[in-house]
Every structure is written in structure tokens, then in C-alpha cells.
Image (cartoon, rainbow, N blue to C red; front, side, top):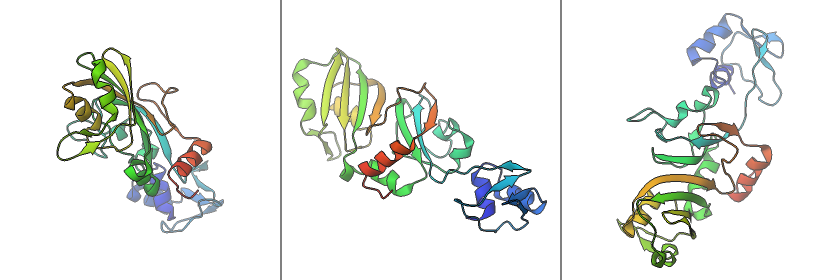
Length: 236
């Protein structure tokens, strides 16, 4: 990797700024002063320092975030702020969002810089389970519960079949899907005349956010990353 890209990705500033740092003799590689920004470095072996401070670089980034309301799953601010504003800026430049949660939906969100794994986590072929807790505007009638795991026509010619549905309160259901259609949960309940007034994703595959407060994030452990790769048949 080029030295200037390494430093910019490590949140040391823009490409122009880090090129200036390099040119003005602030950067060393393996203890030796480097003045060329296009110097190639080995991420596994080379030690990069800026003014004597070591720069650590994550070769793979897998972030688990407990998404708060009011943020858009987009890389830029639009009508609502981007969810990238919530995470550490050192990662925000590099990661992509795995799938989308609506602006008013909370819970499990994964962000990674690994494109292949990102695509496989959201592709219906891999049948990754996504479990949600949905609060409805009315109590859920007992007679529709069996119908919620049948094939359901949700509009625009799309048919879905939830894997599991459990009513945990009169007006609240836990529902597991694998397709990941646009507004899928809301459209499923709308088919039965119910409106989702609160939605939280409580699980993606095996991942939950039980250990995170709303708005908090953490890096996945090596075991969790390997498990994700196994789940999506992605080479370790």
C-alpha cells in the first residue's frame, strides 16, 4: 500500500495533508525517514511512525453498531445525518454499510471494508437470518400468526416467506427473515392491516448488540470474523 494512502486511511488527514507531513520529514518507516509519498509499505511487516508515534492499521475492519434512530444508512448526509457520523472517524473513511436500516429503525448494524463478505451477508442466496422486534399499532390477532410464516405478497409482485414469527406481547412480534427486501417487515405487517410503529433489529446471523448501548460500536473479534466468513463461505 502507498504510504500516503496508509496515513490518510489512518485518519492522519487528507491525501494532500499527509503528503505534506511526509515531505516535511515527519514520517519514518522502520526507523528511517521517508520523503516520497508513493513509497510502498508492507502492512504486515513495516512499522510506520509520525513524529515518533506508531500508526496502527487494521487490515480488515468489521464494526458492530447498535444503530440509533435518526440516522440514515448512507455514506453521505442527506435529509438525515449519515450513520457514519456515529462511528470512529478512523473507520468511517473505509467501511461500507452492510444492508440498510430505515432512519427510524434501531439495532444491529454491521459495517466493513470487505466488499465480498458485505455482498454475501445481504445476498438472499446465503439465507443469513435477520431477526427483528416489531411493535405494531394494534394487537396482533391470533388467527394471523400462522399466516405470517406462509408466502406473503407484499406488493410490486414481490413474495416473501418469513422463517419464524413469535408474538411476545399483544402488540409486539419477533420476526425472522432471510430475503432482505426493501421495507420488508413493514410491508409484511401492512399486508395484514397492521402498521409498524417501532422496529429494532435484534440479530444479524449470530450477531447481537446486547453488550452495546444505543449508538455504541465495537470491532468484531477474530473468532466472530472467522464465523462470519464461514457463514458466508468466504475464504479466511
